[in-house]
Length: 334
Ligand code: AMP
Ligand code: TRP
Image 1 (cartoon, rainbow, N blue to C red):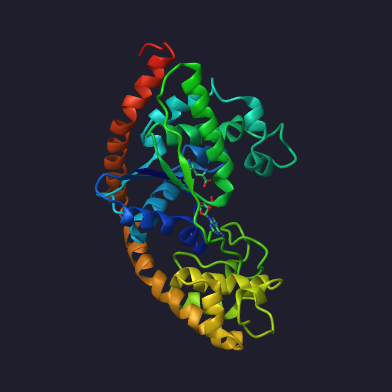
Image 2: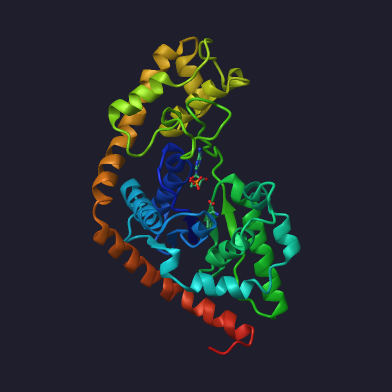
């Protein structure tokens, strides 16, 4: 098993990033047996599709690395690096640009969402984003790729590119990866609006729990979270049409490894006055150790860079045979 996943290094890390992505990686790492390997990287080359200043980009990469380590990614067990330190990703992406079809990319819903109405004004990078993602995966012959539901289409495209390359050049070079999408796919919603995703770009800081929030801030945000006047239902079905209640119950269920039914059963008939302190308590206890390590690590730039350098060296070595074989299959002499 070769597990691989990437995350865009965006600033302002929050509970959604932790429960939606980072925690799943830590779990996969911890469940690995001796023959398996995990590759986790910061997709900084993908982040050029978002305009950001130089200093901010540098900070974001280091912060995301600090958050991953603080959350439990062990750079001695997993290969942890940023894409820009491993040029093989960009090189393979270019080769795959000869294989990927415009028609395939035109169907990508993430491009349509992100480009919005002004498609002509979108960057070429945003359009070919999924080809770089395919390169990220294929260069390591990854077998399992833990991602959110929204990345399923990119994984299918990756398989299509791999199949076409193998067929076109008569090789069995690329392995077809399988997406690993968590069953209870944690989609954490805003604390102010249960129909909007918790997001770093929400203007209200009360809408999210940041990885940097202290115990008091977490408690206050939970207590002020929007709810409805009804008591908690006996089963998850009773949460239908109650997005804010559903979100809070979902967060507690995810944090404690229970189903929403089980959480409902515990609080059935009680109001949010009883539920919120319980949720706040679990959040505080879960996030405190991560926050403490994160705050410490993010001040240690040299140590973070050393971790990424070391990971990049391992990644580059693992990528090299595939890259060489891809050039060779195409008759490109290096
Ligand atoms: P973003 O900052 O939106 O690029 O997200 C970085 C990672 O965190 C991606 O893997 C997202 O799927 C995940 N993520 C971001 N926001 C949420 C959320 N509200 N709920 C669950 N996962 C999220
Ligand atoms: N596109 C992914 C996201 O937005 C991040 C990503 C980049 C990725 N390359 C990857 C995920 C390779 C898995 C494998 O979440």
